[in-house]
Image (cartoon, rainbow, N blue to C red; front, side):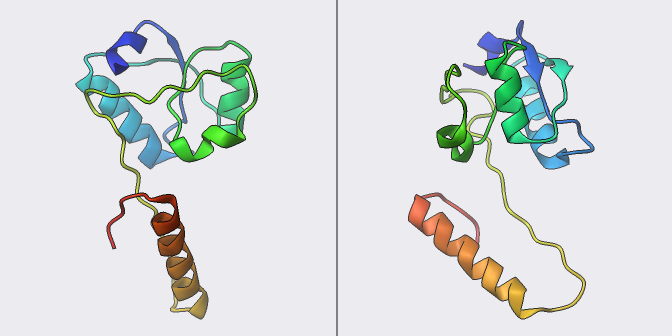
Length: 120
């Protein structure tokens, strides 16, 4: 359970780099009864994985990134308070573009092929 990680050092996105992911992880930790002790604030998932592999502590990462990570990391699916952490994909743009429809269609196809649940 997530609460078992309460005493571990954490690698966690800074709110300014990944506000949605940061907020969801902090909220999940709070629901599990603790505040993560953040020792590193990487900007990218690959950097997060490298820091964990180097021994800095633990991190929560989307399942999508598991196959791409370096050796020496153990991945566990968390169950319990605040898990799983749903994360939506959003696109912001100024003017309508045919690329917006193409990206949305591609994202929906990827979600279906990966067997993920997503709001339409």
